[in-house]
Amino acid sequence: MTRYEYGGDEFIFVELSESMSLEVNFQAMAITKQLREERLPGILDICPSNASYMVRFQPEEIHPDKLISKLKELEQSVSVDDFDISSRIVDVPILFDDPWTNEALMRFRDRHQDPSSTDLEYAARVNGFDSKEELIQAITDYPYLVSMIGFVPGLPWCYQMVPREQQIEVPKYVRPRTYTPERAFGFGGAFAVIYPVQGAGGYQLFGVAAAPIYQKEQRLYDFKDSMTFPRQGDIFRYRSITMEEFQAIEKQVEDGTFRYLTREITFKPRQVLENPKAFSDEVLGGLYA
Amino acid sequence: MIKVIQPGLQTTVQDYGRIGYYEVGMPPSGAMDKYSFTAANVLVGNEENAAALEITYMGPVLEFQQDAVIALTGGEIPPKVNGELVPMWETLAVKAGDQLSFDFVKQGARVYLAVAGGIDVPLIMGSRSTYTLCGIGGLEGRPLQAGDELKIGSAAKQRVKIGTRIQEDLIPVFSKTNEIRVVVGLCSYRLTEESKERFFSLDWTVTAEANRVGYRFKGERLSFVEREQPFGAGSNPSNVVDLGYPIGSIQVPDGVEPIALLNDAVTGGGYATICTIISADLNKMAQVKTNEKVRFVAVDIETALQARKEYAYKLAQIKQQLQLL
Image (cartoon, rainbow over all chains, first blue to last red; front, side, top):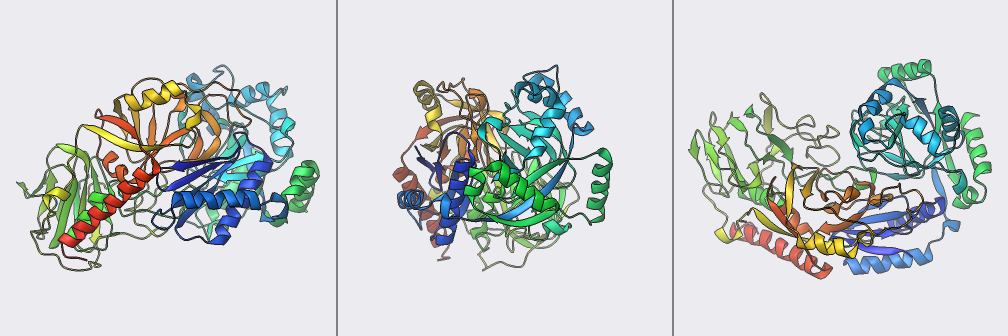
C-alpha cells in the first residue's frame, strides 16, 4: 500500500513499497519521469529513490494536497510497461580487498557485527559463500541498476539485476564509521555503493573504485557537463581489477585521459524483469564487444 | 576588500542556497537562519540573495580595507568596531582600516554580516554558498581562515540611509528553551505509539554535535515497532530501504539520538525519518546551540502553511518599513 506523506511544508514523500525490488524501482522511475515531463508549476526537485520518491515544491505555487492528488493519479496512470529507459552501461573497475579500505575497516572493528573478520569475510559468510573470492565473483558476474542517487553528491545506490533469491544482502555497521576513504566500494542492505568523497559511512567495505565518480574540478571527459558521473537508470558493471590495472587507471585519471567505458542503451523494464540473466548477458556482451 | 585577521569558530560565505540539485545528492547549503540573513541584506540595500557571512558561536576579527556599508543580524554576538560596541539590526558605515570584532555570544548561535554589494565569490551551480563536505562554493569551499581576503561585489540594488533600523517587534528574541514545530509523517509508522508520545513530551538537549549538517539531541531511547525487516533495508529496526530525506527531517538511528538534518545534510539514506521541521521554524532551529533545550510540537499541514505565510508577511513588513517595496 503506497504511503503519501508530508515532509514539512516543502516536501512530499511517497513510499511505493517498504521492500526493495527492481519492479518498484522502475515504477518510481516511470512516475517521476512523467512528473518531470508535465512541468507543473512550483516543483523544485524531483528525487526518485529506491522504493520511493520525493518531490520538493513551493506551496505558494501548488498546495501539497493538490500535489498529492496529482501524484496519486500518476500512480494509477503510469505503467512500467510502456516506458523506455535511456541510459548508459558503464564498466566500473574496482580493486577488491585493497589496502586502503582494509586499513579503514580495521580501525572500526568495535563498531562491526564481527570484529574478528574483515567486512568481505563476514559478508561472504552471512550470504552462504565459501570464500570472499566467491562473493566477489557473485558481485561482478551480473550488472547493477543505479536505483538512486544521493546521500552526498553523486553517490549511486546500485541494485543487482538478478532474481531476489540471488541477491546479496548484508547488514550495515552496528554504529557508523566516522571515516570512509574516498571512492570506497561498500555494500549495505541490498545495495552496492561508491562513496564519492571521504566521510562517515555505515556500509560494509569491500574495495575501492579506481576512477572518481565525483570531480569538482570537472577535468575528466566524463565530468564535462556535471561534477557527478552516475545517473539514475544507468547500468553499472563492477569489474574486479588487479593492483597493476588500478595504478594504470589512477595514472590516466591524473593525466586527464581517463574515460569510462560506456555504451548508450535504451531498454524496457519488462526485459529486465522477465529474464534478468538474458538481459545481463546481452548488455555485457554489448559493453565489451 | 575585507581581510580576515581571525576566522572565528566557523565563518562561511552563504547566500540563499543551491536549489534544484537535490536529486544528484547536492544539499542546498545556504544561510541557516534565512530571516536574519534576508534582513541583513535588506538593511544594506542588496538583492535578497546576495552572499553574506554566516558567523557561528564565536565571531571573527575582520579588517575593512575600503569604506563599506554593513549590517549585522541574527543571534546576539555583540559586534564592535574598533573596540566600540555597535548596534545589530541597523545599517552601519565602516571606514577603510576599521576592525570588526565580537564579544562572547549572549543569545542565539549565528550572526549574519551583510555588506552592500555582497561578498563576491564565484557562483557554483547557481549559488555562492559554501558546502564544506565537498569543498565547493564560498571561498575555496571552506570556512574562512586568517589571512583570507574577501572581495566586495558591486551589486547593491539601492542605498539605504546609515542608521536605518529594523523596528523592534520584527527583531526575533532567542531563548534557551525552544518549541520547534514539526509535521509528523514520512516513516513515523516505524515508531511505537509510546515512543511517538515520548518524542513530543520530552525536553531534548542539543548535544555538541550541532552544526550546519544537523543537530543531534539527547533525551531518552525511542523504540521501533517490531517487524521482520523488509528486503533490502538492513537489519536494524530503525533501518528502511534507503530513501530521500527532506530538509529539516528528523531520524533516530537505532533509537538512540534524534538527528535533525539541516542545510548541509545528506540527502538520503537508510534510517526511518519520523517528522519534518516546518520551514518557518528552521530559522529558529539555526539559532539554538549546544546544551539548550528543544521541545518538538506536532502541527498539521495547514498550520505549517499558515506559519509560512506569517513568515513571508514579516519579511514584507521589513521591506515596507524600510520603504523598499
